[in-house]
Length: 442
Image 1 (tube, helix red, strand yellow):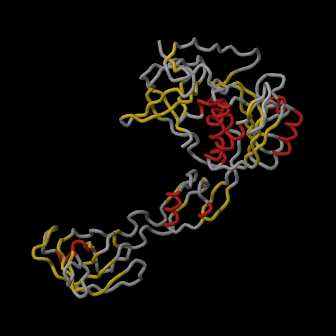
Image 2 (cartoon, one colour; image 1 turned 90 degrees about the horizontal axis):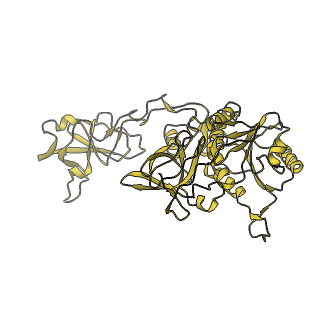
Image 3 (cartoon, one colour; image 1 turned 90 degrees about the vertical axis):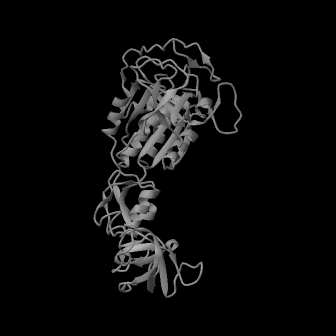
């Protein structure tokens, strides 16, 4: 029998698998079906041309071609001397004994447009990045030379070549990195620091991108109280609004508004109606279950393009999603903090990337070894917060929360590095088995 981790991480006897009976009249769909329904309907944002300096973190809406080659011209990879390899042809590559003496006829610094003549038997001093004289084909590093003065490799009138390089050594050839008009980045690529630098180096000044979505966050629950407020019986500190705002920030999105709503369906409906024309996406937590006070589900029943479903996932089974008549898309997530975070990861993140035109919608899934075993959940995808470590170059994971009670375990969830994904058909996980994990918060 597999072991499960107790609250302190110690193995305990595994409990029986959870019952999966559903209330009459409700159907359960697979997580990938729910996500596919969302992605088939949520629209992409309109593209716009923006200066490259304003494009960091955005997603390309069109391919970008290089206006010119990289490098732009043959240039030196070293400080040294540009020479004709033929002047050193009598010596095999390597240490020269005796050295070959060449007359110095000029100098080219980085950024200089000079193209000095290079008669046979001569050399030109050259700096890293400077264009190679047209008649030169090789650069000898200054460390392999000697000038007229003892200990000084930089010759004033002549230079002695102490080592002969092969023909073409230390020369960066025009277009060897990127050919002119070649595709540097494609639609759907994110514009991170390295890609932006590559575009700028190739002469790109602007890019066609999709903007970040405008997102509003609403946490619901009459029991919720703000930071520092006194608590009476039945009240709890509110954390979901901070959670969602921070999760959005991890994906480069600053929430347009972050509010908390009491359990008043009419007021909540009015709040959605006011927000919907002003933002692209509204994310709410709480009130999506079948209860008499689940205001999100009640308020959204009048929205024809929003559906409420049960998803075969633990945690995060009840979900509402769809387009509001006012224009925005809504994701109404469960109120338990871990359920909200898991729902955000599984359904909201891919949707937010989709509206921005990204071709990679989900985080990579990596294989890790389970240090402890735990019970699976019959018929549902189990998303278990885990702590992840590396041992001998291999990922290892262990539960960050008690697998018997995940959805509310916000304290243990705070120490999680990722989520282990255990398929509905798999069942229990035994110590030493491999599981898929996704890294979060990085």
